[in-house]
Length: 313
Image (cartoon, rainbow, N blue to C red; front, side, top):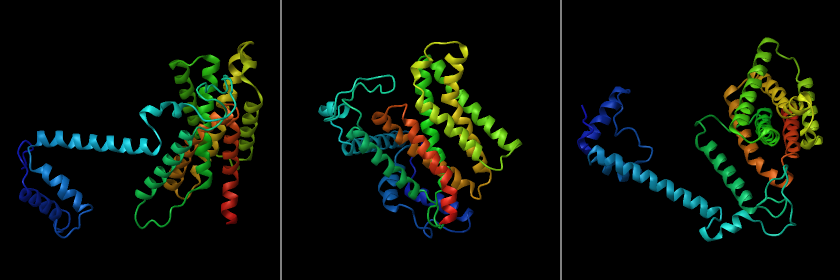
């Protein structure tokens, strides 16, 4: 029995590890190579020699120091300096552009991507790829990405961003409006899954047609036309334009996920696409939120073409 309020000596630690190894199949600690022996003997072993209450505090301090150093390195790579805050908020060059409801970035001088945003997108994208390869199971072969699920995830993130921004402009940026938006998104996803379960569509042609029709209408129709009018025009129509594409996208996702032969790769591909879609939200500083739907249509077009391209390859 080990008392955690007493020091744990090296012999006692080896004895515990030998018993655990014997219970797991007869392999002792010496027979199994350590994953990181240098880290184990330089960090863990000295901490194990002190009382638990001090070891816990020291371990927290070490993790906090590592986190601070990591953030400092990332900030350095992103070009952040305490005295250069103005360079982070203002881009160099570009014509002056007045902030509008569609382009509310009053801290930018023009419709351009700041250098900080570009570096952040590259850095986060590289970090995401590295994490995928780091946690990829050994012996699973090369990494395979399902094109349709990937682009569905990317497009859905842009739809969600556009819906939150559009309804906040029309009805106010309050916690109640945002809560209703996310509740409706979840409800539409549930309805889409129930539809696929009860009446699975044989083809997705009409669902893609409805998705693109609402997206095109969302790009062409400005928001200021909904500032007045009756109940139908003031509330129902803008909600349909903002949230309607999510229902069709949900049906496409549910039907594609149901008939996939590799669910784990399909779900992983969708999550990876969501990361790309989240990074693509920065393009709103270049195009505005209204024309961000054009990028979403591009992603959904790729999702429609991805299965055919895969079969051809």
